[in-house]
Image (cartoon, rainbow, N blue to C red; front, top):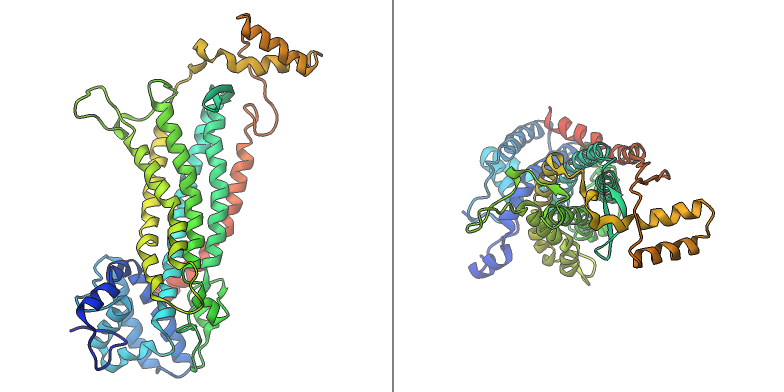
Length: 446
């Protein structure tokens, strides 16, 4: 039998129902655990203000813990005819407990319920993204140290430019992830504020204790203004999407470099054979499909903020059904990015580096700047040194000196990986996931 929290005497047209529900039941499976957690905090608060008895609370919490375990095992199902996760949870409670199950919605709207679910889901996913990003970071730093003395050509305009090193190449992507993590931390802190109690966006005449639910769920603070809490729907997802897009942008560039450097025309790196694929007609092929797909997936993730913006753009204050569509692009994006991070971590850990790239004379000219600087250090004006080396190159007289002596901070001879690692650790510590985790464990009695 259909269960809709809002349905009264008139049943909705089936085509209208299909169109308005859309993929919401499918998307709500992402939120099932978090809907239960939010309900546990909410009813704990309701008991303190006299809207539930202690015995009713005990019964409800026990049933909700069972439903949470069901969702945790991946066995939670939204039944046919049931509109969403909120309706399914209330239906399950009512079947087991009768009228007591119907009391959990006091002081709530589905608006603040889904706002809460999205925030609880998102902060948990941000934690997993942060951990996966940190793992990739450490692999890149280790490889930077391992290959810090192996030179490679640096490019501008895809023309050979100056000496670089694998220490610089791996380390550059590591430091890029530090900035990406800082952006992710800001998104986490904006997400980690409690909207529960804002109801449909205008509060409730019940004397709700919103500070209590904030503490029970381990939020940093409230979304204080109830209208702004509702206005945060879409804004939170957009802000987080920008943070995901930052990580995706770094991964996409890394993937492109790896594909390019792995090609025979470059031959700078070799990807592990087990992470490449073959051709149906060319027996020699070892294609970097993993990084090609990573590049495509990450470019798709970089479009996510714009998709969310276009769905939510120009909406006035208050709730609108448009916001439901954001779930379809937002909720699956976390797993897609985690998959890309995992693949990049595996391959970067196993990648093999060509340690003799610069033996090839085609790269001789990258040492021209080194020669200009050597002449300038010996007293020749820089502009004269530049002209002399340029004329020697044109006349075919240039003989490269392949020793590189860079000592300043962040250069080939002074990578500053310790400082970069310290920056990352500071950002990681700034998330403070412990408060969230301890609050959730306490609610679940674990």
